Length: 248
Image (tube, rainbow, N blue to C red):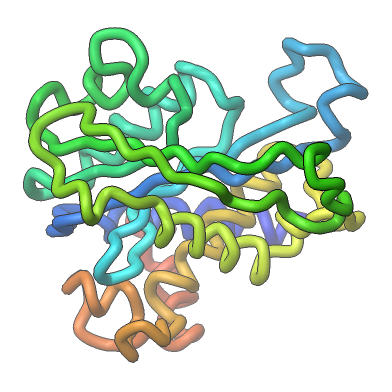
């Protein structure tokens, strides 16, 4: 656990330093559901350290770069912090698409409006599923998708590209490569900080070390944040160097 904590903190600082001035035209965001310590019905509703948590992720559609993330409750505070952090990392105006979670858009532009004002092209996508009970769908199968509703919220988004499919595909990668997000297992996090550390380690490796099949480069290469694929040794060296500079 001490190794996880040390590596997670160093990777978080590395990501904060390296993922800046991102030039992306289309960015998508989604939230990954999970829990810490126990399911929500086993803890008090206002427990800030246990129960249901969401990992907010933003993804550059072209490079597949995970631009930023935020682990917290699905509420106004977490949503605002996530979007303000995203704004600080972007170098230009871009088109942004999220799901229909009301915290993003409801009330004077919602959290997106508070973070970006009118300096963004923003749309939402809502997927409509058939009532599971209406067709007797087995509980282990997903409900059938019967419709998609896309709405323009701010600016002039290109509605043909207003989708969250790439962010949802990233959710699959997170669950595949990070045991803490695997459903119906005993791999869930027992502490909130451990979930955050694990997410930072995953992002650092995914962005800088892992070649993506979509373009044959790492996401950081495709986003012009580095000129080569990092080896694990280089990632370790960079995090150690980052730690030494922070100490100095």
